[in-house]
Length: 381
Image 1 (cartoon, rainbow, N blue to C red):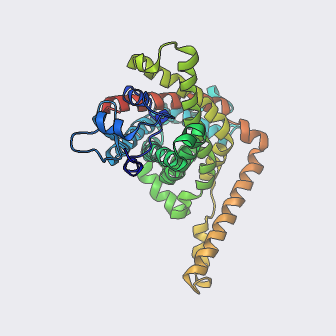
Image 2 (cartoon, rainbow, N blue to C red):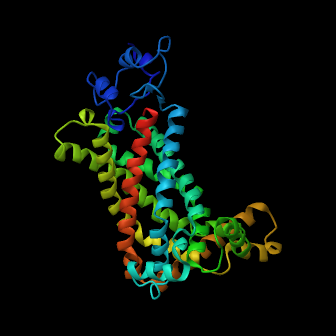
């Protein structure tokens, strides 16, 4: 086939999608890249020899199509929303340990205090914003991760995509998380306020209006920068370490090739690799997690209040107003971050609530990968 014809097909690094279909295609390729003729003859329906897509293993959803990314996003909703909601009791105790370590001294006493003050039903306080926030985050995280991973692989080219695959994992996950946190931030802010300020609200329905009334709409994003600081390293570690750990497990711990293992065994490997990755995620992202809890719990003025009280003095033109507000937002967030570091302390920033978070995030991440891979099996990916 002429080079011009080959350009009609996407370069699909074989390392990205390990399956029987791709393994079969890769037998006749260099650098794990299926030649166009192989795709046309073995994967494409009759009459479609110019499609830039390849089929998923069960040929149910065309890979890298809008339906494919939608399915990955749906898997993210299923895995992230449900798992975060399930560990709400652990998250509740963790947040309160970070905010008030004198009252909530450790895991055992933390559960005891909450049980005494709020009863058993209090352990799921804030479950609605948790479910909605992390469902939105999961949809963006997994959907855009698949998109950016493919996009950066195509930019790098076939040889570099294989050579620098870990960098592609990291870049793809970081790019996806920037978008995912914008979706998560408002619900995370309400969740923390509901969970850590007694009497503030029962849940999302009354908590969101109260939060906006007290802090303004911009207050919902007061913790966005620390959230990025927590979630971007977390997600980079989550995806890159997971992919690497899975490769190592199949290489050193399981003598049977992945394609020959049962679905149950493959899902077990996903959970184990996810749990290990989760422990690493908890460690690298914990300082920012403490900042997020502090900022979303903090009472006081927000940049929205500052801008409203000075609006009559900065209305000369839209550009100057926007610049001033951006500067005020940066300074205000910096002030609260410095206050948080001063109150918590550098050591506390890295250690306060860490053991509980390791248990929570390890279990959470392992369950997420198990559910996500189960969903992909179910829909034919």
